[in-house]
Amino acid sequence: MMHYHEKQTIIENCIFGVDINPNSVKICRLRLWIELLKHAYYTEQSNYTELETLPNIDINIKFGNSLLYRFALDADLSHALKNSKWNIDTYKTAVQTYRQARNWVHKQEIEKLINDIKDNFRTEIDRTHPIAQELKKVGDEHYQLLIQNGMYDDTP
Image (cartoon, rainbow, N blue to C red; front, side, top):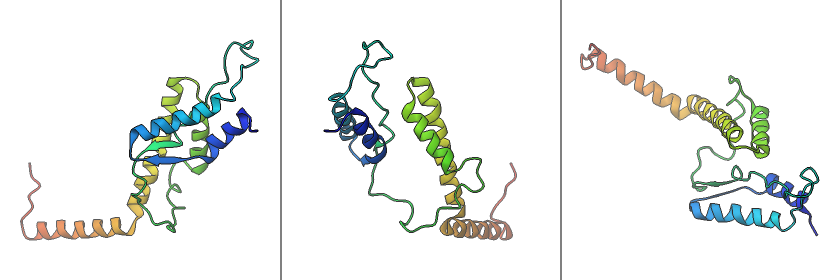
């Protein structure tokens, strides 16, 4: 029979999910916490008056549309964080810290860092994506044609 820490490790590190229905996400999180509570125990640190703290699994089970994707499965994304102040290890550490956060303020700070890293990743991918580069080139050409034909006036 699995015990609390074994189940906690599996839930935190092996179970991930996305659902388009926000209520399904809430139910899934609740079911996972209930499964942990079945084997929860009172901690020695609290003189056996408080139960073991439940993990933050909201980063593993999210609301969204898993059928939409942004990149091909075989896309090389290794360059995405090369020119960034963050790297994949920073992201992994932030996620682990988020899972272990015990107060709301700390959790919010770490969530902001995680979102900043993700935004930086998206920006870099968008900037270097061939379609984005082609759109920029076409947009620049369009702008030059407008200026040449006197159809663009940038004076206030």
